[in-house]
Length: 276
Image (cartoon, rainbow, N blue to C red; front, side, top):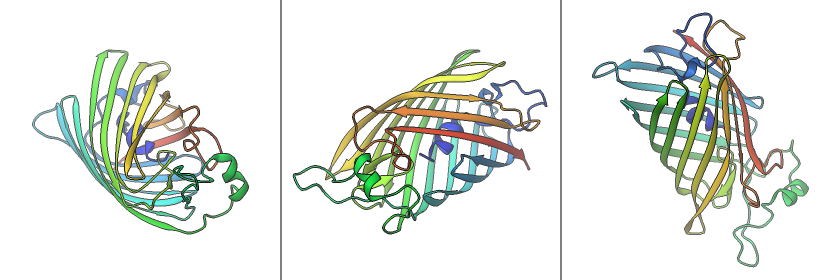
C-alpha cells in the first residue's frame, strides 16, 4: 500500500515555492524546478525523499531525479528513480530494495487452490496483528512506467498510468504495497483517475486500478474501484498536503490490508515539501 506515496501523491506533485496563501488545490499546478526535501507521514511509518527537478528543451518538458527511503510497520525500503516529462507524458524508471520483517507468505492449498490460510479469517487466528512474521525476506525490484496528464479545463484533470514491475518475491507472498498475494516475477498495473478540483477545497477523483499478478505460472487480473482526495492542510505556510486513497474489491479473499484484516486498501498521508 505504501507505493501510493510515490505513484499517486507523486502525480499530484507539491509546489513548495507557492505563496503563503496557497489555494487548497495548488498541487495541481506544474511543480517548480530546484532541489527539494519531502517528508511523508502515514501513521504506521514515514518516507523521506530528496529530489532534483529541472527544465529541459523548454518550459514544457522537465527531468526529475530522486532517492527515497521508507520505514514502516512491516518493512523498510530504499529506491532511486528518474522521470522525464514531455508535454503531457511522463516516462519513469525506479530501482528499489526492500526488507520485509513482517513477512506474510502462504503454503499452496491442498485441493488445487492458489494458497491456504491466506484469507483474513484464517490469518487472524494464526497471525496476531502485533506479532512479527514467521521470517524475513529481502526483495530487489525494478519498475518502468508511463503517466498521462490531461487537464480538460481549469477544474478537471484526467490521469492514467501504465507500469511493468519485476520483483524477486517468494511464491504466495503478501504485497504490502498493493494489498494482495502473488508470486515473484513481472507484474502489470493500470491506474486511472478523473480529478475534480477547486482552489477553495482541493480535489477528489473516482479511481480504478487493474493489476495483472503472477500466480502459479499465469497472470490473474484484479480490478479495484474507489476514490482519491487531496487538499492543502495548512499546518505550515507552504508546501503541505493531505492525501487519502480508498480502494475496494468485493469478494476477493486475497485482496485487502491484511495488517488490519480489512478487505480494502486505504491510506491517509500527510506530506510536507521543503525547497533546498
